[in-house]
Amino acid sequence: MSGTLNLTELREGGIHDLPRVAAIMQEAFDARFGEAWTSAQCMGMLSLPGVWLVIASLAGADTGFALARSTADESELLLLANRPAARRRGIGGALLRAVMAEARERGAVRIHLEVRSGNDAAQLYRREGFDKVGERRDYYRGKAGQLFDAHTYARDLP
Image (tube, rainbow, N blue to C red):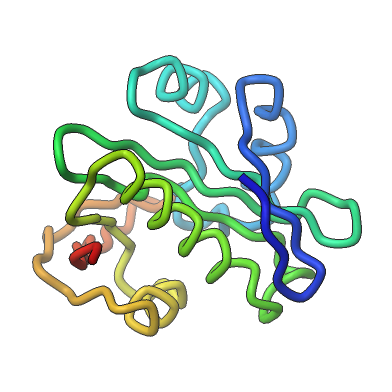
């Protein structure tokens, strides 16, 4: 899996990339919200059938990743992260489109994702054709104990 967009290289990732994934999460996810997964959670997920990882690099440096899974005819974007210094360069969109393309290749006809209310990434998802289809009240718990709703988005994969 490779492609370019604004010098962005995309490649298939694996368990050997988990240290890079953890470093990107540390930078990308605000600790107030407790959204980053642990390396053990990522490793456990990657060991399951139907799960894949896409790594994005810009000018040779790993800047982002997407983790997704497919089962039957549906896929789910589990995580998408991009280092703050590399944002607004099309990397998030490139990762999302790569996940959707791979999901289609795996036979998915629909893709889902979930995002914390107030997360700026929702703008990207809406631009890429996702519609809000649900909400889970008080689903996420921040580091200080505050609760945040989860918004569920989905789109068909033509």
